Each structure stands twice: as structure tokens, then as C-alpha cells.
Length: 490
Image (cartoon, rainbow, N blue to C red; front, side):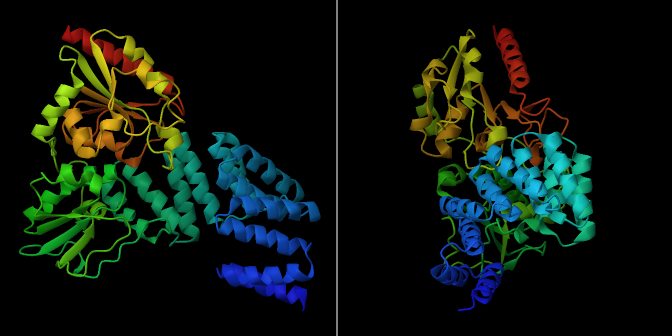
């Protein structure tokens, strides 16, 4: 066997995405030479590509022992560690790679990503600029630098990075996607929602194949049926279902599909004609027939939404009256000012580290007079629950909540909801409840910039971090505002 030729064939298969045959080739090489450093290294990269991080580390560690002066091995070990979330060690490996080869643009850019995750933004910017200096057409580095500038709150520089990437590669998906979010964040809905359609080109966006009807792009709806399906989180569904009445005003018969946790809540919504229960990754049934179909978050762009034309008003959802009475008895505390609290989102959310807060931040509220605190946090995430909820809340209602209809009924009995950026704030806003939303310094696009109100939810007040990671200042304002509100009610 010609080892060099077999290895090259395996590498070519690997690059083309044929991982199974590539692995067979690498193993052939290793069957002849078990210590072939390149075959071991590439087996590690292949394991990384498959998400087998422990195996990847084992292979690449062995490759480093065999070829300690190979910069690529250190870069790839850094990639594995970064995927694990071990950013300090990833930085160490990227820096070792750069000690061996200062012209490694991939190591420079990935080093910048790791520094950003560690909130070391200055070194991150330096690393990205070093990568761009090595290759002024390095679009991925521009996109990564964009993300860092967003964290820093320098949105003009972030937008400039997107434009630089697009000047090199006009169809670069990530650059278009980043630019859409920046436009929306700045309130430029006209251009932002149009560019938001680039999400369908992203590998991470789940695709929905709908075989019946045709995609709606603004065609006349008079006498036609249109199938609207949710595509992102439950909070997004609550926020954007406000567009369904517009479709009916255009003469359409609206078929709306939502996931089970929203069924009871949405079933009472009057501005739709038929409600379907969705299951993740399951297409519509063969018997389904409709004239048009559209994903929910594409509607704003089609109807040319601007800040002044956001539909829906508030409230546009309501709690079930009977369920509300049941929860009224469970809550009790008739003479208290009742506040519902959510302190953390799901840990798998990509922005969880920025949007969630430690439960202990709410501890001072428990000492205020005439207040009753209720946890409406359905799941207790260990990372953020640093104190016993029993020491903070009068009642922890999380385990009693079945779905969003229960949450709506609880909120209906509260005076105030205080929450980080999760689906609960969308529900509370859609119900017209007074809501205080806690936002990180670099917020999600829908909350925009430099305002403490939301055009999406008139009953909502936004409390923003004045600098990255500064929740202390946010809670100083929250506690002062809550104390003032209680004083007025006495």
C-alpha cells in the first residue's frame, strides 16, 4: 500500500464531507503504521467534526506527542476545547499554535472567538485584526469581529465589519445574517426584516418542507387559505402571532400551527380560523390543503413593518377566566403586592450566559414590606439557582405549571412580572401586564437600543445593563423602582 497516496485520498474524502470513507482511509494507514502522526491527527479532526470531543482530544493529544512542532495540531486542539466551552485552555493552545506559526489566520481568528467568550474584548479585537491583516479577504474574521463589536456595544463598527465581509463575498450568509440583526437592533425594520430572510441560508436554521400550496409573498388573500407555522422559540411565536389578524383583514383564512405548550393558550385566540398542533421536525399531514404557506417571522417583512406600524396593540392575548380563578386561590396573599419572577432561561440558549442572572439578586426584594414574591420559573437551572428559592419566594409555583395557559393565569393574578429575556416576558407583554424586563448590555434585536420602553409591548419597561455584565446597577434601579411603586400604593 502506498501510504502517502492512501492518506491523501482520505484527506480529499474528508474535505468533501465523506467522513465514513475518510475514516476507512485513515484506518488503513494506521493498520500499517499505528503511529503515523498525520493519520492520527486527522482522525482527531474527523472525531471533532462528528462531535466526538473526547475521542478528538485523545487523537490530537497523541499527534502532538508525535509532532510537537506542528502548529495545526494545536489549532485543532484549541477548536475542540472551545467546542467544549473550555475557553482558557483553548486560548493556551491557540497561542502555542501562533508561537509556531504567526501566519496562521485560522488560529488568530479562533483565538479572537475564545477571548470574546472570556469577555476579554480588547485581545479579541487584536486577534481578529491580526487575522485580517494576514488575509484582508478573510470574511469569517470580519464576521467574528462583528460579534465582538456587538458585545462591546459598538454597533457602527459591527455593521462596518459586515459591509467589509460583503465587499469581499457578496453572498456571504453569516455577514448578511449579522447585518440583518444589526439593522433590526437599530430599528431599521424595513431593511432589517428583508435581510432577515437570509436565515434560511444558514445551516443552523431548521428547514420546513411544505408541499401543499405555494409560499406567500404578498399575493392577494381574498378567499384564500394560508398556513402559518412557527419556526423559532415559543417567545417568538407569542410575539409575532399578532400578525395573524392582518392576514384575515386581507381576506385570508388563517391556519395556525403551534407546539403543544402553547395550544391551550392560543386556542382562545379569536383571530385565526383553525389551530393545528405541531411536532418538531414533522411536516404537515398529506391531507392538509391550503393555498399559501408562510413561516411566522417572515410576515413582518412582507407587510413592510416599520416602528410605526407594529400591529397588535396590547393586550392581544388573555388568560382563561376559570383557570385564573383557580390560580387566584393558590396564590393567596390578597393584601400583598404580588410579583412574579423569572431569573434564568434555558442553559442551551446561545446567549444564556449574558441574559440569565443569579437568583440571589432577587433576595433583597424578599425583605421589602407588603410584597409577595412568586417564582414562575418552570425549571430550576443549577447554574443560576445559587440560593434556596424558599429563602426568596413566598411560593415557588414552577413545578405546578403545566403549560403557557397556566403561566398566563398566574400572571393574570399578579401586579408585576420581573424577568430576564425569556418567553415569559413576551407572554406578560401580550397579556398587557406590567412587566419589567432585564436586558444585557448587548440585547437581542427586538429590544433595540437607548430606550426603556418597547414598541412591541406598551406595558413593558426595559432595564438595561449600563456596561457588559453589570447586573448590580440593573438591580439597584429595579429595587428603587419597586420600593417607589410600593410607597405609592401605601
